[in-house]
Image 1 (cartoon, rainbow, N blue to C red):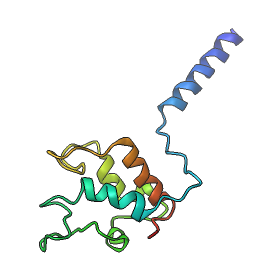
Image 2 (image 1 turned 180 degrees about the horizontal axis):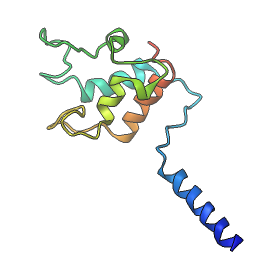
Image 3 (image 1 turned 90 degrees about the horizontal axis):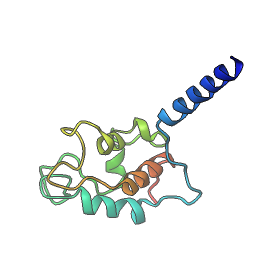
Image 4 (image 1 turned 90 degrees about the vertical axis):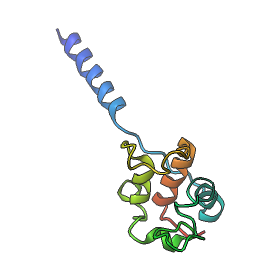
Length: 123
């Protein structure tokens, strides 16, 4: 009976462990805004009608760290940042970039997560 209980507790612990969402492990290398994040933004977010810096009607231009901080990035807290939430939202009506554009890759999302977690520095 003790073995059955121990096995049940072990199985429960494994299920609990694998059910949790694991955050990326932060690398020792600093993610660079200019080298790592800007290329993602330029290729995936700065389309006509979206976050294009050339569009005078655009309210949210993704062209500098300063524009990122205005209520969209909570430096050091990726999961509390609207920027991160908008690229990982499970609701297809809210996710960025919006169709017909391709969603960000897992690697691109991870870079943005790490950049925010590392303090969202202008480097």
